[in-house]
Image (cartoon, rainbow over all chains, first blue to last red; front, top):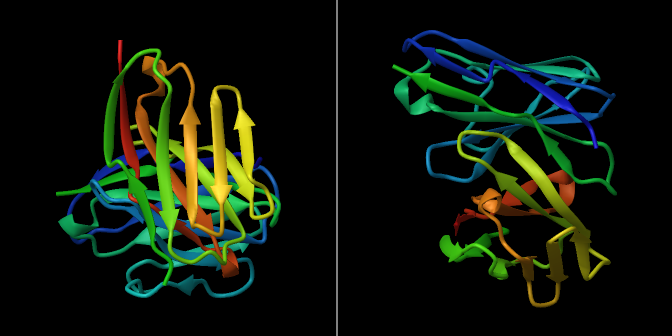
Length: 114
Length: 111
């Protein structure tokens, strides 16, 4: 399975600021996925990032709040913009090598907004 | 809309016991089902992937089964150990490669 390096592992941020989370994959993948896990909840898909095109956002998530970059087939970033305490969550990226493979997740970014 | 339910929400058992975690889903049109483990504040570790054409998968002390027609999967853990304490998540993989997660079962193994 793929290996994902996700940074930072955690951060404490002031409200109104932005944080950019990075994911680096050890192999080329077509799609990368970004999830949010709010405290005590399961994972919710934010968006799907394809290289060379705009990300596809799920209902309830918008590009202005969660801009995503996908400059190549091994790297993606998610920015959480104009943060509020409600954005305090674990953010995770995920990839899948193909339809016969399972999903691999990064180690997560634990964000606290104060 | 696919809904995934995991029962029980929490489970506490003494070390050494065998146990079963349950996962049900409402739409049987799935590609695969995957079980994950999550330690507190951490990312997800993949445990087992079951293709839609398969009935079960095994890895060490773990065995996962899939019954698409009834919309059910189980994760069997044999001879549980304190290190197995974690939250276990099941997720179904549908069209457009979307993962739909259950709420998880928080498992505690008591020494």
